[in-house]
Length: 332
Image 1 (tube, rainbow, N blue to C red):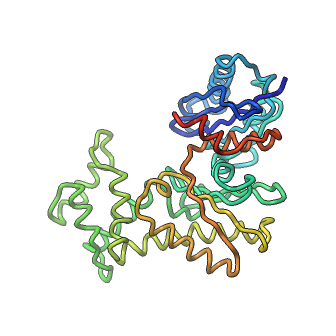
Image 2: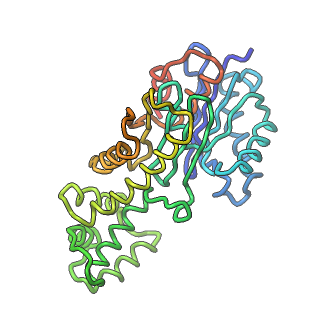
């Protein structure tokens, strides 16, 4: 009897899986290591081995098999092209799944926060990515290739821009002074300009460095809150990069003007950053790009695997609400 749905969030460092029956009862969860073939020495072959081990083990623990699965959603980082999606879909079929969806993990932000799994998901975590599912069921994901796609965001981007703003103040004519210099000097434990490059280089490339990368990113947000010109410029660049991509998806997909456009903001930078200047700048620019449109921004605070499970339930026709999904994974 096909009475189970599965959601898998496969990342570059860790992965989660959650299973629910048709009543919304969570019957199994698990934590696993990376499921991004791009980070594996064995590439697709290693992914097949790991994914099979992970999924089949959790099913066995629940006393089930792939024959009991009505639908499964595999939201994996590293699914960035149609070719990759086809190859990984073949892997999933060989493992034994029949009804499933393989997608980039950015889609989980849509399914996990937007009503009826329709809307735009913007990721600002380890990386920068956007995905959308429109009212016709069309799925598109954009960005995600760093400088090649003008990704002005993601965990390491803000700290890098803060560091360069400090360098520019010290060694380039005409650049604004910034309170970020004092903040970063304190993080590096230095007091003189002459120490900056040497100590920064050591801490960035030493695998045992004590440099707090999250704190380095937060320098931009904290300085912007105090009205620092350079910091506000960095966040404005990031907001423009996100907002313009959101607006493109809204204008080029089936998102009618008469309906609210739901935009999910997911990832550690969006969710965990206490200073919300970036969120406000994105909303302001989206409003300028989409005049007259009602746009609702939603912070996705649940783990992404919630989105995978919710989307699987929708595709299976199971009437499971997000409250039940979140209750089942509250311990993750």
